[in-house]
Length: 180
Image (tube, rainbow, N blue to C red):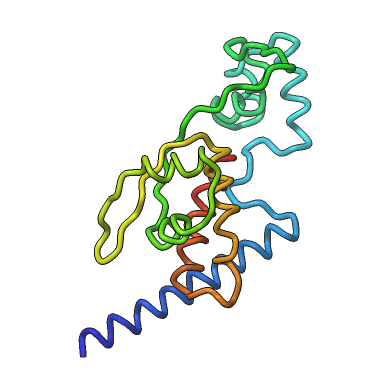
């Protein structure tokens, strides 16, 4: 009886998670972005930036607009002196990032045809046991993670097993967080 209740609650949790993701995707399609709104509204941000360029301190700007110094610093973040100007012609080198890939996605990719860099990243991954399944901890540059995500696109269609769709969604969320 306990197993039946656990299975029912897991099904409910999965359904709720899918509905949440559907709602987030619909909001994103409308142009809404999640997260907390900035303390300094967009119409006052230009005033804050101009005042900072004229020599006003961050603390003075914070007092004037009734916000924290951190909020003022966020509004003028790209103007701060500790930010160095980088040559726009040379792209920043991508550093390796470690992400956990669900085992169902890893199993699918092991059977797929991959580029040598993708295959090497998959082969060098470290297996981490998680309950009945496992995850593969992969260290690679973000471009390789995005390529691996593109390779497992067939798991997102309706013909795939629901657990595989869910695993791909989890990996897709982790990869999309790299861009933020």
